Structure formats: C-alpha cells, structure tokens
Length: 88
Image (cartoon, rainbow, N blue to C red; front, side):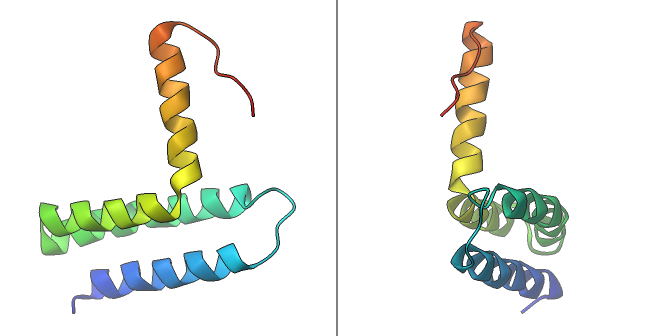
C-alpha cells in the first residue's frame, strides 16, 4: 500500500472518530478542517496511484462529507439560476 493511501485511510478514520464526538455546530468546524486536510491528500493519492484511484478516494471523501457537498450543490444551483440560496 502506498503512503498516500495510508494517509487517506488515516483521514477516513479521523473523520469517523470526529463524527462520533458531540458537536455544538453540527460538525461544520470538523468538516472545514477535514476538507482542508483532505484536498492535498487527494492530490497526493491521484499523483501516486492515478486518476481512477483518486476518483475512488474522492467519492469516499464525498460520502463522508456529504452535507458540505449538498450545500455546495444547492449554492451552485442557486447562483446559476440567479437566486439567493435558502438557509436551512
């Protein structure tokens, strides 16, 4: 196993551990930190293992951080339609 995949696996373990902890802000702070750490790891995985493995790791990360992805999709759709995004 390459070092980049080991880092990606450690990222996934940390993400799951953080999800188990109680949070006052619905884990948004953790999501920001995980995103900031995950983007370079994703680039490293893609560089070392190729685009298909990088895509698989991206999909795994998106499944862990699904609410930020959903909110990004809603925001993008609202921007394309010229509306302001609705707040939950």
